[in-house]
Length: 149
Image 1 (spheres, rainbow, N blue to C red):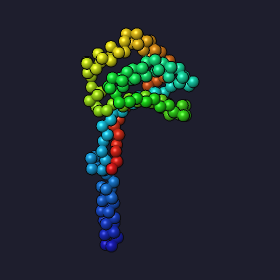
Image 2 (cartoon, rainbow, N blue to C red):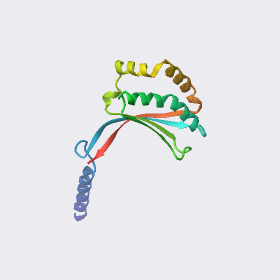
Image 3 (cartoon, helix red, strand yellow):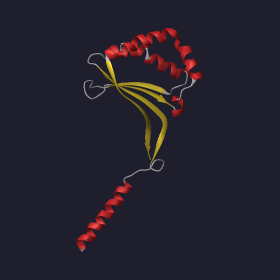
């Protein structure tokens, strides 16, 4: 009987320990308002500089204009120090101040296209048409910061 009581007590204690291991949003942690749009890319061997050259004339130009116009908060490019390991070796990230900023908006689109111009649009299309020769997109994510209390 004593063994049964010890067994039941240990189960009850372990259940209470498990329930304390669960955290609740807004009680134990908060969610950040910034939204991170992340694209993971696998660059073919020895093609990183070629891909970056293309990005500098297309994606980088576009996000710089978007930041200047206040449509995005920031942008980043991260490259792996170990480019041949894993499913991706480069990350393209755009930071939005809030989810609302990702919604379609004709006024913002028109302002961007006016600043972007037809020449940049054509050049960007030509550059991006060659991207499949040097890279593969491996994932797209929308993430938000978890702020532990």
